[in-house]
Picture 1 (cartoon, rainbow, N blue to C red):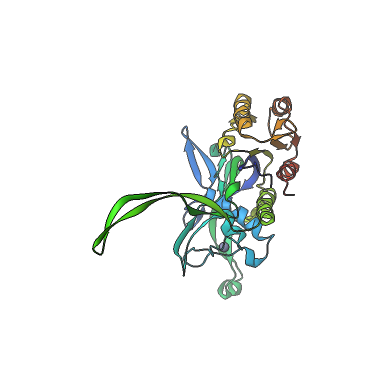
Picture 2 (picture 1 turned 90 degrees about the vertical axis):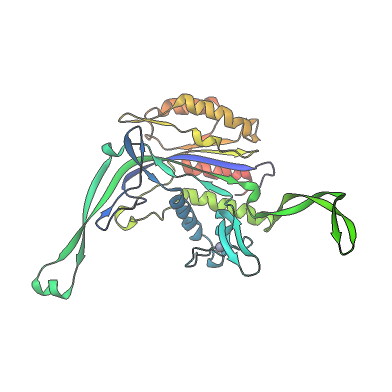
Length: 339
Ligand SMILES: [Zn+2]
């Protein structure tokens, strides 16, 4: 890994065909879509928790079972940062016999995926029948079933993630940085003794070696290319991976890139060019430099954005390479020196 990289930011757009990626509360005969309201209209979203689940499952497909635990009945995972790729990358709250309750903040921060097309323009209700082939019906020569309504939507989602690279494969531990002698006085037995005041800070302790840290970040980036374990796929076969992606290699930690992709929906999808330009300028300050330019990569499929030409022109004017989404992820891995 390039030593100067402290954060890896990604944000992307993904277009879906008819699907229901993440159901809400619903009822027994309704499989609804999770929704948020904005300016009086409803839009679909996929929770950050669901997005994390998809990424974890994509990684699980690539590693050995001993490197990817599953949560127990209490929802607790193994907490073995050294061995478990998922506990390291996605954090945990668990109790360990010798250490009690411990918490790891996830070094991988994931956004919910926000649908950009209002549901009143993009949703249908699909009736599906849960058939029962019980003995009674077979004898009567008929099939009975419950009607279930499934909300489905075509949409364009915006999502993103940011990796706190410094904390992958590492854990914070307390360290004494100074000691002020004799400041506090305390009675101990019959004598008054001066006690030192210890001043502590925290430092990051390596729990894996460098090559393992590299491998874990690469697994996460590969997961972004391939994640697929959404709900209800037996009937819906959706691709929810990025169609337009920006990736930044940053020398400081910030989430600023997440504001780069603002979309206007007026029967077609237009990316807000001014906004993209402003955020690229701001994020460029945070980026490491590659061959004299800020380390930002773009990947894009054709015919996703109405104003694709403008977007290309802007990215080219900033010397940002425009590849396909997967190739952009591969270039980022090369630049990180983890491919
Ligand atoms: Zn684990």
